[in-house]
Image (cartoon, rainbow, N blue to C red; front, side, top):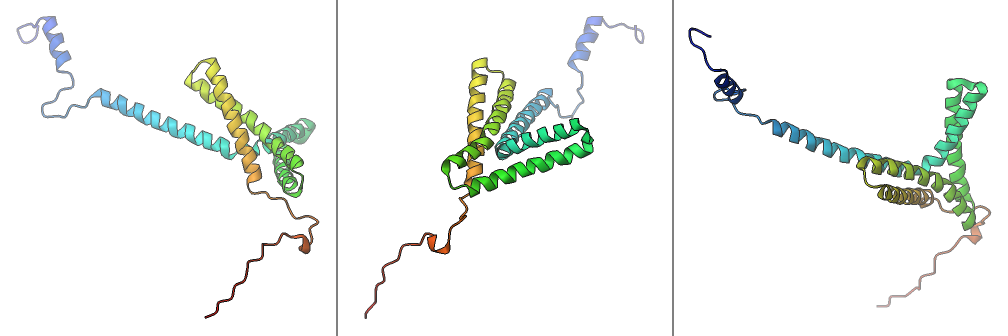
Length: 196
């Protein structure tokens, strides 16, 4: 009982639930807009994040073999008593040497078979890394097991092909043992005389 008279409980509940948050003259902000905005922002950022991750995989694909070799060398140094401070530089130096020696050997060897073998040494670990990365991304989407495996194999082929292409893109065989007389010449252009 308030101030001498009582309101039925049902009337009080209806009044408070229908008038909740209402202020005369105020703009009503719907809760739906906040949720929708967060969903849209989340989807956009997810697409950007996955796109960045895919770009990173393709950009770093050629470095998979040097990374694995450097990791193994660093772990071996750590297990033989070098500690973290000694194992880290060992892994970095061995990884960089693997990359440099591989690129120099690829450019220096004239045989296409040996060049293909060196490119395959760099492309196969990249394909394995691409398989597992694509499998993990496909697992997030939740398709069936068949589609996860299919997408993972497609990702492995694309990543391995990208590593192969990046390895062979700028490397041309070095002219080792070639003399200046052996260099290919440009074809002679016909000369014409202008009379007039």
